Amino acid sequence: ISSPLVPLEVCGLAGRWCIVVVDPTANVSTVKQQIAMAVGVPVAEQRLFAGMRALSDDESLPAPLPTDGITLVRQTPEEVPTASGPDLFTASVAARSDRSFVLA
Image 1 (cartoon, rainbow, N blue to C red):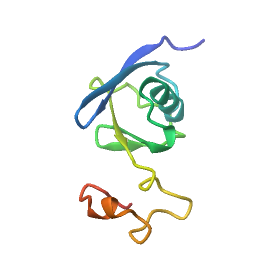
Image 2: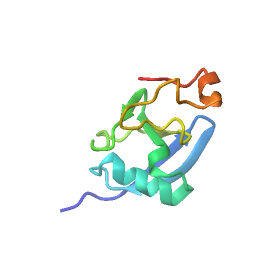
Image 3: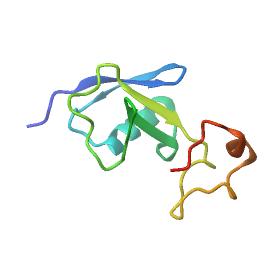
């Protein structure tokens, strides 16, 4: 038995990106695919947050779903972590000068 689909608001730092209709038991990577189809942001460039917590691709959506939606932060291709991880030596000049850029 599948769960009933529910609307999930996807917001950015400047406001709403979109609303996607999701299965509340779906994993984050599935939701990222829906967001990519809705707004054109490639899955690899998406970081999703529930409140202050980053959501990893292999985890399920938080239960209950946040009433204020989830936050989408778009990473430029230069900011997307690689298998060896990001570092300041290979980051673009724009990424190195962006004070909101965090290496974790």
